[in-house]
Length: 121
Image (cartoon, rainbow, N blue to C red; front, top):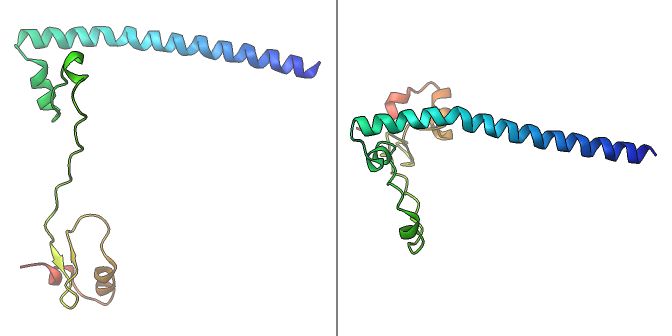
């Protein structure tokens, strides 16, 4: 009897969660509509194209679905290499100055060396 009561309560709670999720989704959609309408109005007012918006985000504009179906997926962008800024005089190891400092540099600084002494000229 206890199990039936638990299962019934669990089903009731899950049903309520589903209703609340739908309600939250509707509220979210309702709040977004005026914002989207305002953006479209501004785009029309200033003759801004979707391609210009995509370029402003640094992404290419998405092609219509008919064009996309036959196209191969785009390759991921390669990260740009950063020039080294610091060099270890003995080993020649380098560091760009980004991220966590390498062990050789932190050890040298612990011994009293200045970081500027490792700068690449």
